[in-house]
Amino acid sequence: MIELIDVRKKLDSRWVTDGLNLTIPVGKLTCIVGRSGEGKSVLLKEIIGLIRPDSGSIIVDGVDINKLSDHRMLYHFKHFGYVFQFAALLDSLNVFENVAIAQIEAGIPAKKLLDKVRQKLSLVNLGHETLHKFPSQLSGGMRKRVGLARTLMNENLKAILYDEPTTGLDPITSRVIHELIAQVHKEFNITSVIISHDIEIFKYVDYVALLHEGKIKFFGEAKTIWESDNPYIYQFIRGLPLGPIQHEIAYEETKV
Image (spheres, rainbow, N blue to C red):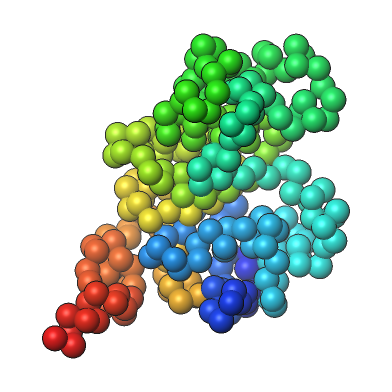
């Protein structure tokens, strides 16, 4: 469903994606990891068409999206969901309005949406009592779940993309979110892509890709990742300061 071929994108003076190649397996849960600042979120936005690369091809559902107009792009991704890093809820709207915002803007009466919103909230383990709460009244984990419920309002989803779904959450809440993502993936049987630096996600995903210096340095099954001898993923998952992934702190220490 999703294939990136020699994708290049330059921001300021840095190549965020630099001849990047990656194929996302259909119907699987794939996680893209990498150091902070490597451009993982930029890569995700390139896949969904929010950022256009300077060159290369991004094939989504059989179509090179780089050749689409903005209008055609919007139509092409109507069956794709995107869960933002910090949920991207509107502070002035309550939970019901945030979850159903696309349908409300399309002119569907709120009373016709109530049952559907309740159903989606139930899918992400939120009760009806949250319907009329505002984002400021919710915990970080609850806001993430409301963002996912809003995505699930889109019927006939083919894929969901998650941008750092556990950023800012404690370990217990992070596990709840990971289990919820796995549950949604299994229930809807869709292609899922997660951007993360949390190695706990490996327990729930099928495949792992490592982004470093604009390229995918590792791609493999999550269940065998701890046995991999790939030097990049070996260093990353063990948090080693020395290795092919240069770290400025380690570099300073070697100079001393």
